[in-house]
Length: 194
Image (cartoon, rainbow, N blue to C red; front, side, top):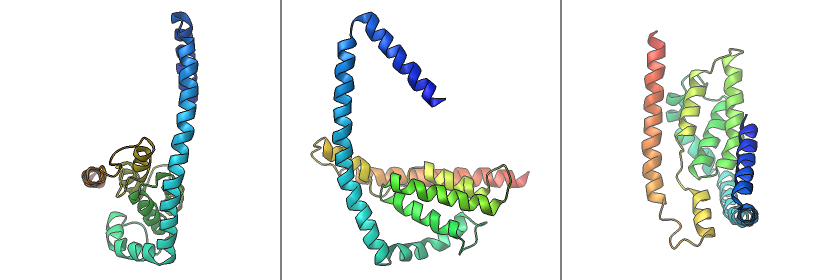
């Protein structure tokens, strides 16, 4: 469906440009956009490589395992129907750790693995389990400690202070995370009462 929408938007834009005689500006915008995409991608690669390397060092040093152990009691409360030693819990913790460091691209495969494991736990039921809903709510609340991607974009475009958004991001993360958990708990409690 999204592909059809993109094709429709492109065709409408091209037809409009042809009618109004601005097709040269469309060509210019296409090539400038492609150039900016390459510059942005290269800028993101350096920051992502840095943070992924840092994550690997933290993993080798046992920092991630320690963090996972530290967070396990809280995670057990958030996901009460997942056994403590189940692989789903490990994937959830890894996903959240990657999200905390703003590595959304690295977090996505871990999130998919966590969902697969939770689906196995839930059996062949066609509906999402309570843990799956909670995990989705937390993930969509944009949990971020270090907004790596945004910092990289700001650095690419020569921001005077690319890291000045960290404080605001922390506040927004806290508010969105608490809101997501409260809303999730409200609807979970409401569903259990039925």
